[in-house]
Amino acid sequence: MDRTQETIETLRKYKQEHIIRFLEKLNKEKQDNLIKQIQGINFEQITELYNNTKQKIQFKESKIEPLSYLDKSKLTKNQKEQFDKLGEETIKAEEYAVVTMAGGQGTRLGHKGPKGTFKLDVYGKGKFLFEILADNLKEANKKFGVTIPWYIMTSKENNAETIDFLEKNNYFGYDKNLVTIFTQSELPLVDEQGKLLISKDFRIKQASDGNGGTYSSLRASGCLADMKKRGIKWIFIGSVDNVLLKMVDITLLGMAKSKNVQIASKSVAKANPYEKVGVFCKINGHPKVIEYTELPTSMAEQRDKNGELKYGESHIMCNLYTIEALEKISKEPLIYHSAHKKNSYLDEDGKEIIPEEPNSYKFEAFIFDAFEFFDDIAILRGTREDDFAPVKNKDGVDSPKTAKELYEKFWNRQV
Ligand code: UTP
Image (cartoon, rainbow, N blue to C red; front, side, top):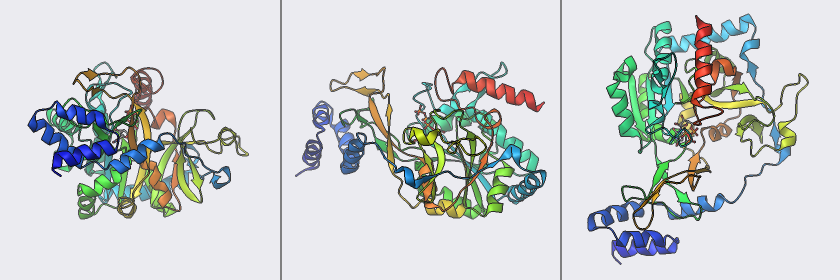
C-alpha cells in the first residue's frame, strides 16, 4: 500500500472521511504536506480524548481535604523578615529564573495576535502585556542588582509573531542575551462530532497543548539544561495575562525555602463559594487544584472556625519550583482536559467558517495537575488588589477594563 492509500485507510478507520474528500481537491504539493502531517497524528489518543469530553471527572468527597496556607498580610514581622532574607539570598546569588507562559490562544479576549502583544489602556499611553512583565522584572533586577534569566514559552501558532514583536520593541529594554524563547508542543483540535478541523493553510488545525505543556517543553527545548548550566535553583512560572503578577516575590520564595518544599504557589481568597475558579485542596494526601465544576457545592460552602472558606484559595498561575521539581515533572505525562472553544476552519469546499459560538474541543494539560506528584506545597495567600488582575475576556469580569482599574489603583498606591 502506498503512503496516500495508507493515510486514506487511517482516515476511514477513525471516521475522518471529510479529510479524504478535502485531500482529493488539493494539488499534489498540498496533498503531500497534509499526508505527511496526518501520518504524525496519534489518532488513538485523539479518539480517546474526544470520547473523554463526554465524561465528567468525579472525585469522592471523602478523599478531598483542605490545604493549609499562610496569609501574607498576617505574617508576623519576624516571619516576614526571615522569609524575605531567604528569598533575597537566592535572587542575589543569581539562582532564580522566570518562565512566562505565552502559548495560549487567547480566544476569549479575541485580540488579533499573541496575547502578550495586547495593549492595555493604562495611564493614557497604554502598555503592552509583555511590556508590563518586562518592567516588573527590570524593577526586581534593579532592586537586587542582577539580571534574571527570562524564558518565554510560545506556541507554534504565535512564535514568529511573538519574536517579531519583541525584536521590534527591543525586548522593552530587557537584556536580550538573557531572554530565551521556546515553543510548546501541540495537539489537533476536533469539532463537536470528533472530526478534525482544517486550517487556512490546508493542514489539520492544531493548537498548543495547554499550559501544562510547559514542563515537557522546557525539557525538550533544552531550557531546563540551560537553567542547570546557569546554576538556577528556583524557577517561577507565571501567565502572560495577569497585569499584577509578581514574578519575583521574595516572601513566597523564602517561605518555600523555609518550609523545605519543592513547589510553592501564591493564591488569592475566593470571592464567594460559587466563584468560578479552581481552588487548592489535598486529594489522597497530595496537593491539587480542583476545578469549580468538580468541587461539590456542599464542600465549596464549608467554612473553618474563623469563618473562612475551607476550599477558598484560588490558583492564580503564580507558581514556584525547585529545579529538581521541574526535572521530575518534565518527565511525567499529565492528563489532558478538554476546553470548548471557538475555532475557525475550512469546510470541504475550502470556505472559511468563523464560528460565533464555541464549536470545537482543544485538549489541554493544566500546569497545576503536576502538583500531585509532590507530598506538599507551600501556599502564600496574597490579595486581589496586589496580585491578580487577569486579562481574559473581551468585556465584563477579568477584562481589559477591570485589569486597567486594578493596575492603575495598585500603582497609584505605590507613589
Ligand atoms: P488560559 O488558559 O487562560 O488560556 O491561559 P488563553 O489562551 O490565555 O485564553 P483562552 O482560554 O483561549 O481565552 C493561561 C495562561 O497559560 C498560557 C496562556 O498564554 C496564559 O498565560 N497558555 C495557555 C499557554 O502558554 N499554552 C496553552 O496551551 C494554554
